Length: 284
Image (cartoon, rainbow, N blue to C red):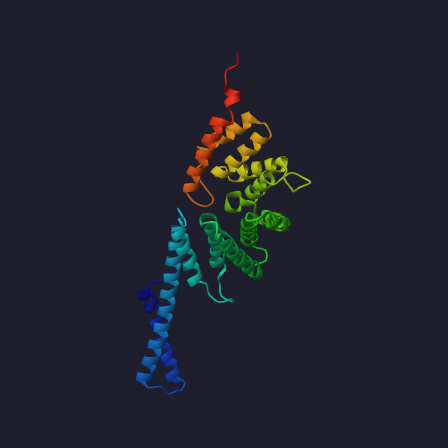
């Protein structure tokens, strides 16, 4: 609603309110009444303007994350932090933005600062879960920020891995399609990258299961096909892996940013060139 429309809708009610006060015998001078009405209108208009400014600013934060560089991510993070209201207000979207943006910053910043941003993302994700315990966003971004922390050291990884898996399983149960099938994609990658039992939870067949589910749920995500292809290569399924790698060049979405699509395609090109050389070589 524009301020003009607001005034058009509100003023008749305020005038009628003045008439009711006069009929009831309550005394109020015209100057006092005008002043009171003015304060009320100004307060309401300021509230509307602040809401509009907040909405526009949050759109700007999302735009900054489309092709994020460290300065752009920091700016987006600051925007979310500046507009985060006190507990008790509706702040769920802002907490999601903070948890996600902290994770992205942890991915793009230099090595010395990565853990600080992942810890920040963990903090906001835990706040999310305090306010909405059954939110897929809370469990998912907590898992990803914990995974970021786990990457920093082997000991952290051993300690945090059970919780990471638990949070991803919870996110998957709530909404397996979230973040372009993120719960399946991340679980599949963990089972691909982790050492096999008994050292850890690595299992290429579990990886295959989750990444097939990810490509089914979000077939336009390049990373889903790339990760599935890499798992298939490990399982010595070259024909199926080649199909998935070719799909990377058809898919046109990425969970974080557009640049990620190009990165995935470059990796797919390298795999197509190197992983199938012996298969494609002519036999004597």
